[in-house]
Length: 235
Image 1 (spheres, rainbow, N blue to C red):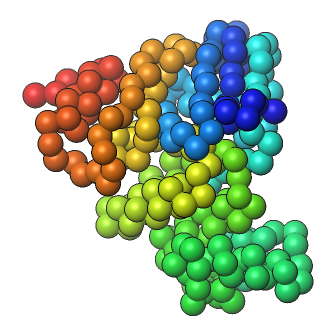
Image 2: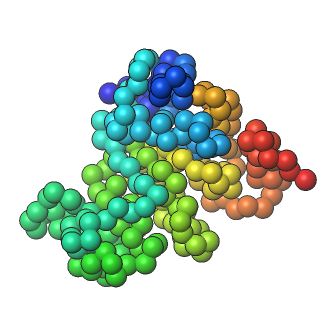
């Protein structure tokens, strides 16, 4: 478990697949209630990092200390078709108390009218809201987001950004968002880190006051800096 002030403490972490070290000497500290976005080209260790933080994988060397209560929202909602929406929020739990928890979580994500619906009746955005409710229902100290907006249309994606920002401000978990979207990272995060060759090659604080928009000199400068670090030419 991490210290009370930190949700994540990684020190000299190494994870090897075959002969390739995906993470090598990896260092990362995330404060409690801090929102961190992770960028990097495919194959730089973003998914491996998330799996280590979630407990789905183990490091080959180094120290991994994370908040005890943690939840993951994946790119796909991963709902159980044979269970109603509220049952998907509190998987494995039964009874009136579990249902009350589910209703409260679904109300927070704007789905109070879908408590008894079947997953097949939901839109993509609604299904992902259920996944977010499932992740938040037990008040995690660390919320892990694995490109959860990637498959959504542009308007739904904006609404999901607003929802996640509201839930984070209300419940104050530490958040790690893995994304390929530079704008998304700047809009949501306190810090943006860039991975390359198994290490953090940039750790950039985002000092823009919330709520944020895509306009303004500071946003443009941060965007250009991150794109440059990712090897994208900005004209």
